[in-house]
Image 1 (cartoon, rainbow, N blue to C red):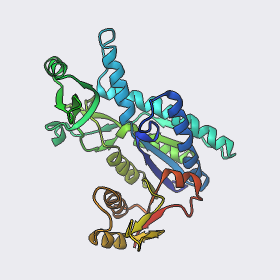
Image 2 (tube, rainbow, N blue to C red):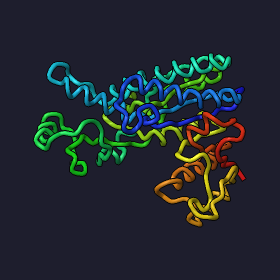
Image 3 (tube, rainbow, N blue to C red):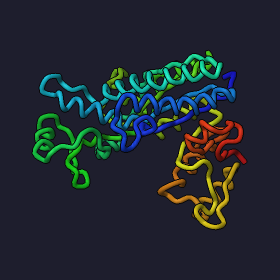
Length: 315
């Protein structure tokens, strides 16, 4: 690649935030805010690849399908995933094109409908755990178990939900297309929702499956296979801190892998907050990546890219 590549992963809740109604106008405004931070990275000279989650959006599609099930047969989950890749990709794509035009840094932006191969024998298929879609009464849940062979589980007293497998991503079918687009100077939106889950049958043909691939797992795999220089992990704080919340708290601009491991061993990064992000950063760099940037969406859109956030680098 002629330019350095930065991969940014955002959650589906970046476009559909908690307590919002899910209106199209809300998602467009949220995408406009995301486009500002994406454009900052492009302006800094990077080829940009964006991966987005789709949890709230695919959930809404499944609710719509259930409401109209008596009139129109519902689609399977892999097709619902594809629908969100198209709709969310379009929203992000349009807002980023407009933002880049506004700052006079016009760059092509392309969404790639992305299939991701999983192992048909992945242990996740034996123990579905990922809840998707609407809540049902127990009576309706039993009906769906019999009629559609769905796995249903009661969810914290709120009702019953369909649960699906969350298998490990193995192969990104459109990887070469993403590489070619980046090489040609495009910003690329790919792997939406963790990718459309498919398996290969005995003849090697692709077959869609009812599953949800973890977006962060897919992002890490894609960043590695693209040879991304920077993997951007977005969180709720502008920078990583040592002694977070204590009088001795110190914000960190730069941290080596060795330092990150030592801080992990010292209990600086709890498992329920910063810990998994630091672990993911270490894994990416150990696998050959150059740099991980941890920051908040607000800071990435506001501050100069060269100085924003905390950078974790090789020793």
